[in-house]
Image (cartoon, rainbow, N blue to C red; front, side, top):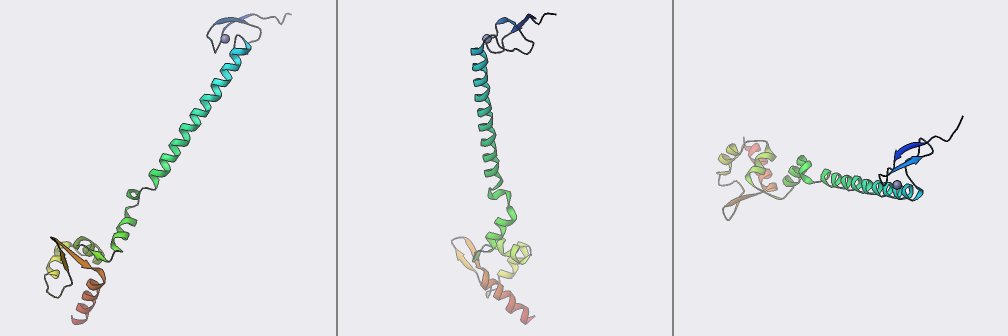
Length: 134
Ligand SMILES: [Zn+2]
C-alpha cells in the first residue's frame, strides 16, 4: 500500500491548483501557509478591536442621563428654586390646582421676567402654616 496519495487541491491563500501530499494540506507552499497565518492573526486583531470599540460605546450609552429619568427628576426637585411644574410634582397636585393657590397674595413667589419661580423652603413653609389654620 502506497502513502503517496496525490490530490489536486486549491491553495487557500493564492488560489492556485497544486498537488497535495496529504488531505489536510491547505496551501501550495510554506510561504503561502505563513502569509495566510499572518493574515488570519491580523483579522483576529481587527475583530477584537471592533468588539472592544462596541463595548466602549455600549458602556457610554448605558450611563447617559436619559437612561435614568427618575434620578434626573429628583435632582431637579432638589434645587432651591423651582417652577410651577416642579412645585406641582413636589406636592403631588395638578398645575391647575396650584395656579388657584398661588393667586393668594401671601403665597411666596418671585417673578423673573415672564417666569414665576418659587423658593422650595418658602413654599413648604407656606403650606405648613396653612395646614395649621385649617
Ligand atoms: Zn499558494
